[in-house]
Image (cartoon, rainbow over all chains, first blue to last red; front, side, top):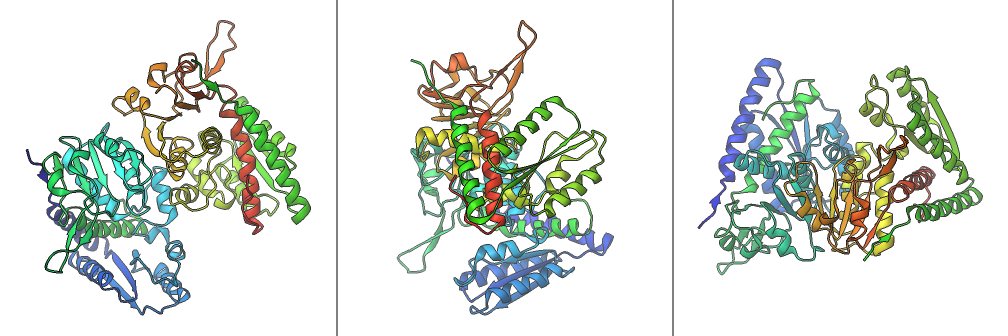
Length: 294
Length: 294
């Protein structure tokens, strides 16, 4: 038996196409062109790749992209001043400050400075609180991608036993909130969980977001379960290039699970797609238009 | 075998005594007298009893109590105007609008109008978001009471399998966040959970917050588990007076559990105690003083 491999790339492309169609509609019907500002402080090569990818995807969807690359020695005050300008700029509907920021800058101060209505990363407490309270919210993009993949597979998640391994503000906790809102029975497990294997084996839907390569083994998975692997870990290879692996031991899990996301090509591509979705949602909210159905 | 009955009244009295001591210290050392404003709209008799109880407890702890009783026909605008005045009043450190409000008033508009720094009910999304993000927050009082009782019994909750039945913004969800922050493995179950009995039976710590009299039966409880019963349901009796029961079938559960909160006299009394704690915390934060250790 071999699990169905969930094609995150195809799913992301479909979402991006839906975004592009919605952007075209908003532009012609309302003269509204959603705009996303991405701020990068410093020259971390991985961050630069992410930022470039986000900018490209934004433009490909027909939206405006505003890239702000600041030197590593930028002061916190200067960064906050830029955020204040972006908050006030009516052409900017979404603001994303690429994390991590250099050590002399407090990431929480940055998060709190972004207008919650433009917080397309969904990290402002006002947004996590709105999500937790069942109110409309901007939700972190990777959790939205996880939910999208799970729902496109299952339709309804109601009554499923879902286990989320990991409790970060960026992934684990918001994924749990989204699954709960879909009426799954949700367990949040983590490094202090006693018998993590047994807890994982209860899951009809297992979301792994711990950042430990291959930690979740084949015999931790209930036969037929759906496995969403959020981990993106680079491990060394003989040729020195390294390769990306998830938090789940894929070769073992694929023999047990019913469906599984690969790494790369699973959750990863959906993240940028939902960044675009969030930007369109923020733009519609700012313009007093109803939330688009994408 | 019979479970230990957790004495919530004694626990609440100890917390209230600690609050009174802290209030005395703040007053003499810093000239700071914490003040709590309670707003009641309409004349629901149960609400009136609660409000009176809160006012009495506030004064008994040495704090200032501001009671605002408004007629049932008060407009939403008038209520929001009062909240704006209380937000601006430096003698008021905590604001509580007794829920439910009359039907012509939107409770969300009321919650959003309260300054999050004075939101001693912990219902503002900014506070639920701060709680979800692991930041200092004002947390709803009943969940704080639940956590206090569980911790006074167990010391550490790390690694415990905790199951919360119910996912309200007022109890279920914040209790789950608090237990997660204490490193318990947390499952949130609810009306859509498939095999609720089996899920409950996994729990080392079971928190029932569903509002259904006696729904959780003895054989839903793992032998030796700790049971925190948040339900307060009035059921009819032969004499017509009715009596209060919890969400747990107490007589059955007491034979199985290791420890259990009774209803009344369990979680209930701790709620007002933690309202006082929240008011003191809000007052200290407003005065730039460190969070008191109560």
